Structures are given as structure tokens and as C-alpha cells.
Length: 262
Image 1 (cartoon, rainbow, N blue to C red):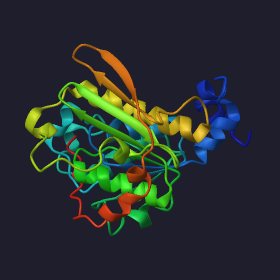
Image 2: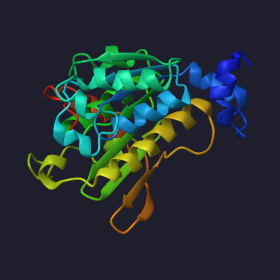
Image 3: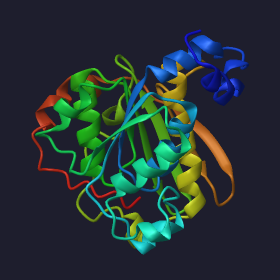
Image 4: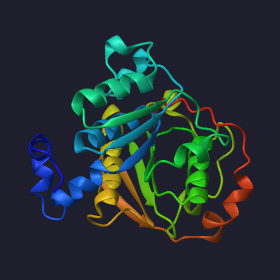
């Protein structure tokens, strides 16, 4: 292992874990993950990836912390109200783990900058809450050949899946965005705060398992859970030509206003 004594102590519970070990921890330290959205999903993802020792974490969000965020966006504290979410998130991530290099993008994730931003990362986590954002992330990741974790929450429900090249993508499940205003947002319908933590930690686990190569990813299946009755189920999905090739036609869509209110 090329870990120093402090790192061996910090990551000891990973190092002694069968299947991870020192080699797996080194993979994490060399890993690069982009989190799109620093809200309800991005908050636990960022905390757990930083704690796990993912060496380079990028986080993009164009929003500032609002008091209504604090019910579920656990990386932000009351004194952070009014601060850019990416600044607030970076501060907490560096406090958890100074090993981690955090790159912030206080900006929108758009069709104009998506491919450039994605270049430097091994894995992408979608922590957004709008359909245009999710389709843009899907399309950009498939074009760039980047694996990513999709996540969505509303009320008491959550769903997530992971795409790696050659497996089903978000468009294989949902071919196109629903009509405007057909599905309410979290700000309109509400969201059970702990649901964000439940789903975000699953997404963090997917990123960690991808980097270390441990276990079976959520590929070609969607994990769906109902936190009101605490029921989980998985639905198998198949790659489709639409999901893997024809999506390029829809890539030229309006700029996505990424403000992670999830």
C-alpha cells in the first residue's frame, strides 16, 4: 500500500473490509467523482464520498442555501443561509477529510459546458430534481462514455439506477421528459426529509463500489422504495437503441436551470 500512517488509521474500516482492502482504498484516493447538485441528494453523497476518501470530488450547483433547504440538505447549516451551496458543501467536505480535493462549479450544468466538465471525472452522480436536468445529464454521460448514478425523490418515494457504457440508461426507462407541469416538484408536493438521505447514501455506495470494483452495481435495474411503508423493490430494464444511440437528437435542448431544490 502507498498509504501513510494517518491514512491507514483513517480508512482502517475499509482496509480490513474483505473485497476492499488497501488496494481498494488506493483506488478511492485516485478516484474522481462529479456530483451534479448540492441539494437533498448531493448533500449525503458529498459527505460520504469525502469521508470515504475519494481523492477528487467535483460539485456543481448554481443555487444558494435557503432556510427551506435545511430540512433535508444536511451538508448545509443555518449560518450558511445565503451562501452558494457549492461553497458550503466544500467547507464541510474538507472538514471531514483534508485528503479530498474539492472542485466547485458555481454555475449551471448546461449543454454548452456539460462535456467539458465531465472530461475530468470517472463517475457522475445526478442529484438534481428536474426532468430537463436528468435527461441532459443522461445524454451527456452517454455521449462522453461516463458511468453515472441517477436518483429521484418525491414525497415519500425514491428511485435510482446506475448506467455504465453498454447498459440501460435513463432514456431506456423514460424515453422523454413529461409535459411541463405534469409532475409536481418537491417544492410543490413536498418531500420526506430522510428520503433524501436514504437515496443519497445509496448513490454514494454506487460510486464507491464502481471505483473499487466491489459488488454488483444497479445496472439494468431500477431500485424503487416507498419510505412511508418501508418497501423496496427492483425492476429489471433492458438497454434500448433509443437509450444508447438516438438520444443525440435530443441533446440540443434548452439550457437546463440547475438549482438543486431536491
